[in-house]
Length: 141
Ligand code: DQA
Image (cartoon, rainbow, N blue to C red; front, side, top):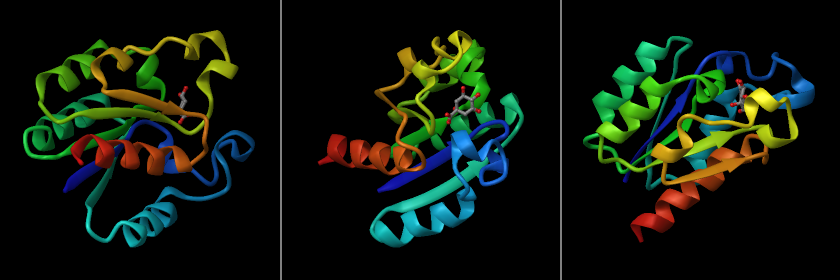
């Protein structure tokens, strides 16, 4: 089972960025815990602040991975190109957000990528990623 966690812009600053919203923990630390908890899953992690890099990564893994867990950050609310990239590959994607975007500013309420994803999880802090992983495992079982 091969699953990619793909994080978009500003998520490299997790732990330091608006900790009241996103928490005090860095993503690398959380990712190591996730790997230890799911030793049978080949989990990989990639982060970029650049839309084209995220699209390239989806193209690179999307034909071979069993699933993509995508937190596209602010590109969620702007990117038709990410929507198209997700539609272009067979791997199911789960859209993830750490915060509950629907409790926040109105511009965060619309997602361009939800319609290209198998499911959406938001609002559970970093645990949103684990819940998405469970969702992919459930799809495959
Ligand atoms: C986010 C929510 C987005 O609106 C925001 O732009 C982010 C993070 C989240 O994980 O809660 O960068 O995707």
